[in-house]
Length: 226
Image 1 (tube, rainbow, N blue to C red):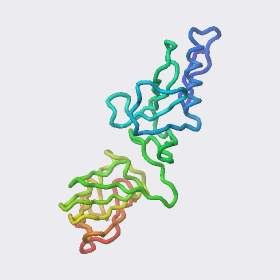
Image 2 (image 1 turned 135 degrees about the vertical axis):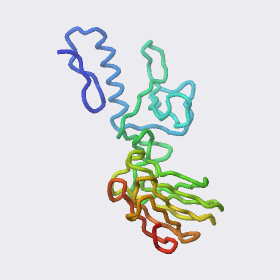
Image 3 (image 1 turned 30 degrees about the horizontal axis):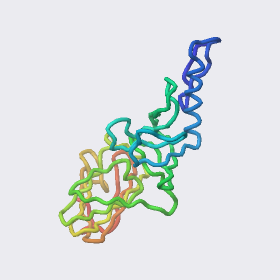
Image 4 (image 1 turned 180 degrees about the horizontal axis):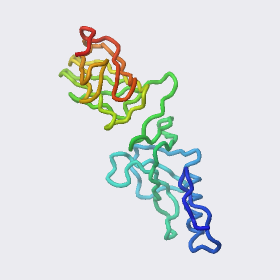
């Protein structure tokens, strides 16, 4: 029976008797299994040191030039010397981050914080425009500038938020915050609509209720979507 990739973690199995290098493959798979069952990384923001320590595991920062977002393990390389070994994450992998004391999940190409009951992440927006992305899910976006800012809801083909996704927007700064729907997206039944928040400290909740269909509820200017 020829070797094949098993579902789930992608481990190899069903080697032919005496198959060449099966020991190497098995060792690599056991390392993968050891790292991913109850996965725990020290950090996802600390730059990878040139030399690690035995058993050390980090997520390579998203801003790194090479191997960004991979799981890096300090272990023995195929040549037998100690080195960083990289595991490319798959959609849905979950890791405990020690220096943040929280779980993160690999979603849409990024490590996203796993929501905790009663805890809402606050994201500060200083730019004058922002298109919602996967990491915004379940968070409060605070606009803090003095200039007008637009938060855009992207089309499902661009960012596939699940139905029921919730994102909050709060205008903290003096700049008027407007929520706009991208082309093809319905906001409160208006295709490509937009609405401004009702001044500083006003807030609104965005909920996806269907394919390219969102509703906004809260302190809205004039209480309507145009």
